[in-house]
Image (cartoon, rainbow, N blue to C red; front, side, top):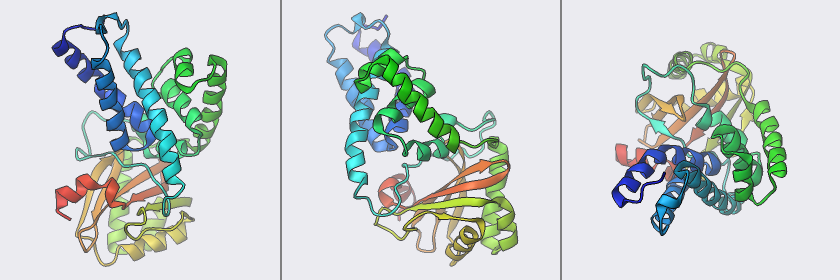
Length: 295
């Protein structure tokens, strides 16, 4: 039963908060919007006359956050239509780049999944995230998206087809991807074209998000030789920092160019080679790095 005491309720909410943030982030692709959704859910919970009447606090909060995130996603879609260049999700960066207990990549917020989710309609994305990723029953999802449970099943099924097509067939373990990213950084630093090509899938895609605020690729580039040439070109002048971190649950890089401006690179690995590189340079999505480096 949900506690009635305000302090106990706050403790119970804090226990749910990490899951709620992941639900909202996976739905919106924005950590700032996810934080807003979770904060609003807390305010709504505090406004409930008798919280003890909530039989399943986790389900109530997931439903509330799911509905708020869907609303936020609808508003965000309008803004993204006017976005300059390629829009990429805000990266989740952790500095414990190689935790000993991490064996496989975190699928629920991987950059590969987040990018694929952008191809879905808001209703499809919400249905997939809530049901397939976080296990919310179809009848509860139906109330969020305003469809029947049968219609939600169809939404989730169509979303799953899109996600499956874009998901690595043989994903790397955390350690294996870490080794690959280290080798990638070394090849770029040394100007080693052959070494870099050996790490890239022939059909690798490079995406860059500058948000119109900094220089970035105007559109995705595909093909290992074209991508390698661009990577080696932007590696000069040499960056002031290249640091291995965890980006959306997988090994990635924080890079500061010769001016100190930061960027975050996320990698998708399939069958031992890099199939996608997502570089986020938009300073609005990297405020935490701006403050950290004083740039």
